[in-house]
Amino acid sequence: MNAAPPVDDMRHAPTRIEKAKPLQRITGTVVHGLKNGRKFGFPTANLVLPSEAGLAHGIYVARVAVLEGPDMGLYDGCASIGTRPTIGSFAANFEVHLLDFTGDLYGRRLAVDLVKFLRTEVKFQSIDALIRQIDADVLNARRVLRRISANITDATRPHPTTPPPGTGKPAPTGGPHPL
Picture 1: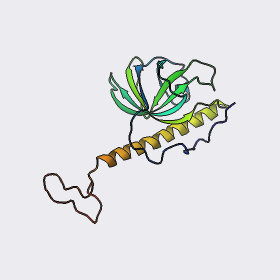
Picture 2: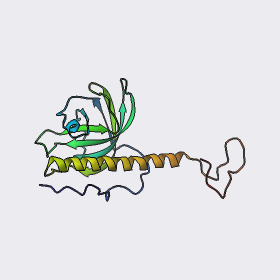
Picture 3: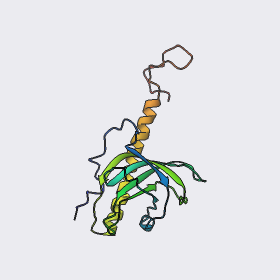
Picture 4: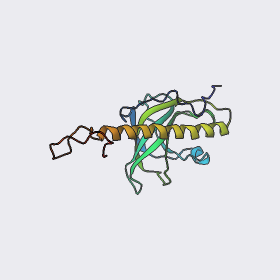
């Protein structure tokens, strides 16, 4: 049996994320799964995992585009690729929990960008231990996504010595940037 990492272990998280460039994009229509995520308090959207995906089993930070329907838009998420060893022995599965989402996605098309690998899949000694780890994974995904957003914001912010548009004058110095 594999030992689970501590739930707050961020040793593998980067100290700086340069871009939100996806490791891979998985697109598909949401299908019904076992509904364990819902029972555990983390409902997931299940997609058929393409055989050519070639991704490591484990937990990923995700950005999710709901491509159709009333909830169309972009969402942050935490995805899982694996065989769900804690609850049984199953074929490889792909599911994503959309953070702070409460709608119904069955039959809707999604595009899921996997932006960061968090940890490998492990078999937990109990469902309670699994739920604690899922909670920690979601927290870690939020941390990573905040860093990505901060880096994107920093990258789009003008440099303090860049002249304000249309003035030809240098930007003020000696104080905080106006943005």
